[in-house]
Image (tube, rainbow, N blue to C red; front, side):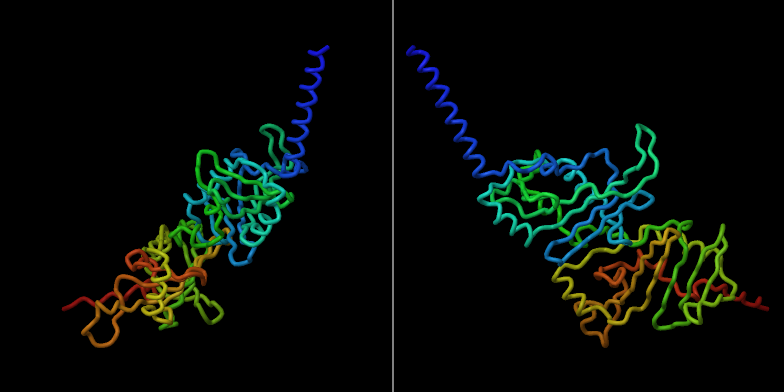
Amino acid sequence: MRNRNAKLFFLFSLSLLLLGMIIFWQSNVSSSFRVEDRDFSIDRELDVIRIEMESLSGEDKIVLHKDDQGRWRLDGSLYANDLAVRELLGVLERLAVRQPVSIANRNRVEEMLLQEGVLVDVFIMAHRVNFGNFRHFPYERRYQSVIIGPDTPDGESTYMRKTSSDVAFKVLRPGYETGISEVFRPEQRMWRDPVIFDVEYESIYSVSVAVYENKGESFVLKPLTGTDYKFFSAENNGEKLHFQADTARVLRFLSSFRDIHYERLPDAEGEKIRKELMFEQPFMEISVKTKDGMQTSIRAFARKTPEDDFRGKEGISQDPNRFYVQVNEGEYALAQYYVFNRILRPLSFFKNKPAEPPSD
C-alpha cells in the first residue's frame, strides 16, 4: 500500500511538473504558429529568377532578376555582382530557425522589424503542368516573402518574420557564428557589377551617340543582317545618313561593347573630390539598346587634372587618363579612358577619307 501511494505521489508530482513547464512555455512562447511560419529556407532545386529587397523605411529598393542568358541583372539594366548574388542564394538555401521570439519580447521585436526591417520577396519559375520530366506552361510565382530585421543582441542570429505570419523568429545560417542581416542590404552599390556594357554584336539593336560639343558628330547606328548596317541622324527626325563608311571600323566598333567597366564607385571622400574635379557638362552620351529590349546609357564627364599635377601651370588641364561616367542617370563612377576609348567614337571616325592624289 505504501509503495502504491509513493508511485501515485510520484506520478502526481511529475504531472504537476509537466503542467508547470507547459504553462511556462505558453507564457513565453506562442504555440499558435503554423509549420510554414518557420519555413524560411529556399529549396536549392528551385529556379529562382527574381529577388526584390526593399527597406520598410522606404529609403532603398533593389531588384535582382535573371535574364534570358542566365545572367543576373540589377534594377533593369545594370549587371549584378554574380558573387554577391550567389552568396545571397546560398544564405537563402540554408536558413534555419533557432527559436521563436518570446511573447514578452514580441512587441519590441515587431517594432524593430517595421522600423529597420527589409522586405525580401523571392520569385521562382514554376510550371502549371508539372509531372516528373513533363513541365509545361511556365510562369513566375512568388515563393517567399520575409521581413529581415536586425541581428539579435548576442549577434548569433537575425530576427525574421514571414509576411503571412505574426510570429517572429530568431534565424541563423548553420555553421556561422554571426547574424546575417548585412547580406540583405537593399543598396544598389552593394549589388552592382563594375561591368556596364557586355553585349555581343549580334545582340545589339542600336547604338546612339551624342557628342555635346559638336552635334554634327552625333549619330544612331543600327546593325542589320550579317555585316550590313545603317547610320541615322541623331536629329532631323532620325533621317538616314548617306556617306561612305569604313566598314571595318564600324564592325570593330559594334564588337567593342564587351567588358566595358568602370574603375570604382567613389566613397564619401571620393564624392567630394568628384564634385571638385568633374566638369559639369558631359562631353558624350552613349546608349545601347539590345534586341531583347534592354537599354543602358552612360554620360561621360571630363575630369580636371588634380591640383598636384597642374600646379604651376596656367589654366585648368583635363585629366588624360581618367574621367567620370554616370550610368542610367544614377551614381557617378571613376572610369579609365583606355577601357572606354574603343566606344568613344564620333561620326567622323567612321567616314572614309578621300584618297590623296598621287604625287608627281
